[in-house]
Length: 154
Image (cartoon, rainbow, N blue to C red; front, side, top):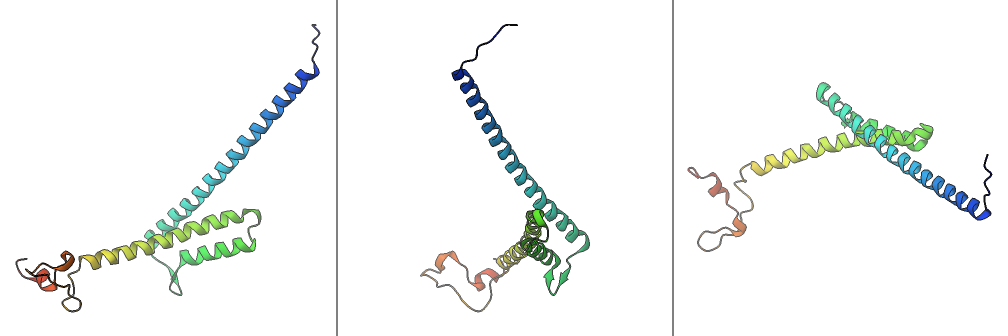
């Protein structure tokens, strides 16, 4: 066997390189764990929202004290998560609660949007505010009066 003489400087360079490689691998591991946690959060939120949406579509809306059951379940998950009832898994309770709150918010927002769309397509009221007319019959801001809107033959 050939004998190898390793100088102190060479040994220190090897040790520094090994420490740098270890630090880099630790950083990669930390980033991977962080990305995995985000992926799990996304799956939990989207999964519970999808399941609750399916249940709502399949079985209808269930309310208790005029509050959608998804909202009550979300509140329960968040409260028990804050109390520590799930121990080290409490972040998962919050994720599920967030997904249920997303369902409640989305449904409420869709209902309000439909109401606004229906109100916008409804004929204007026949009494109440009428925009000012300019000389020559031109309406202020391009609005039409109720009489112009409902006149036969357009």
